[in-house]
Length: 316
Length: 323
Image: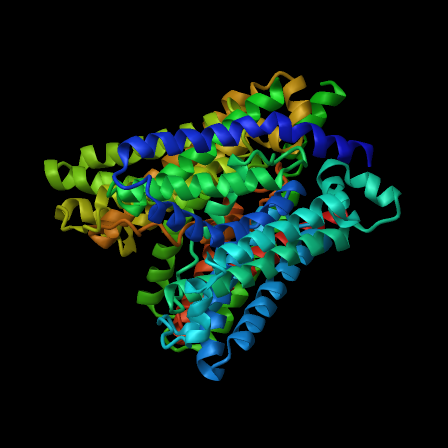
């Protein structure tokens, strides 16, 4: 308990500067260089577009805190997005589509957790394997074609507003609050800190690290299902490669946000700021009419810089 | 010889054990061949067998360099993206200068530089290898798509194309190259001090450091070799496909890792052989070829490869638990 508490209270103060400075720098640079960056419409656009990434980055923070990784998240997102599309087109029901997506995501999350916790396969290889499986399934269920004719009840999720606030933002704030409560105000959250920081202590305390780990990865899968709904609603279609590479943006956001890959501590607020940093970076480059390939390369460079500074910090 | 040196150089004593592991895998490959011979009439034809060998050789070039990385308990997830960028740069150079030699040089240099950068991230910046090379993957991916801007470079000199599609005494030229590099790789890993030091680093990095092995320099070498082999593979791809496109290496990383793991190289470092990876590449190619011959939809390939990766690591874990 003591160590976990310290990790919660001491580190955020140390971290706020890092990711906040990155975000402010990016905003300053694009404010000058990118035409139309500082406008209410564009800022709202960045916020709404970032919601999908936040849905993945929240559980990714927990996963990385356990010294794990989920490379399958983007492929699972593709699959859950297709499930939303296929089921809602077939039944006309948004709720059934959403349920199917969460169920499929949950199944993948639990499978990841079992491979890692029960069979002891290193996370990055286990989830690389399930990435292949999810990608294959996405191609098989869609037959390589886009799924169109999405019912309005689904696409409204992305375009509707609640008391003037776009629904995706309401959902994102809700998700953030739930994760925040889960990580910082429940026993489960404390155990998650222990999973990365001191796994042996959990065993001595009579808890099962196996079940906790499965729980953490299952959470990731379920959130990929939630993000799948947002994605299908946003594109108004299901596409067999739509989620490709999203896991990388999520990992980037978490890494920039100051969650460490090796020391079992993380910070949800940092991850949220990291999501905004990635969102601003992509949006700014986009406004400067740079192709998406440059955006991908820049996010990659951002991750390497973040890890470099993380390494410097851990040495000092 | 002190006890410590014995411990550090233990892998040499394991060679007979490694041979047994490879022997099992050769039998598995033969069983797959046998099954496919019964299942499909077109499997045991000269054209198909040569096709399997050529496919396996493409996979082997990437996987052999990767084997050294995995032997040090590291991973290089950037090999596929490396092939893509190297191929596109080399393709452009050959197209503009008409000089295949220059193109080959550019491909190897690109691969080597990328490998060195990976190595620097792992050693100097101390970023875990899987995440450093994963970041590199996306940097390369972005650069390649930006550089090519959707274009395809097509049509290389006939002499150059021979590297990928030519024959010598009835065997495809890439197959000869594969055998040459199989020999070099095996000699390097098993019979040189550097090779043995790589095993030692993977088996026990602390003991390796204490016995005076320069960890950073050996790791740098390993990642540079992996990058250079990806550069080499890109040349074969260019010559074989007669075109360069940004998405050429996209689906190569998972199969390359699969070949290494099926070949018995442990993700936990210190155990495995380049010859095992050769057999691993053969097995994976046979499985994918078999699916193709039995008209299984190509969509199933990533799924099957993913399952094979997981099974291979799990088998490795399960069999080593007894040791």
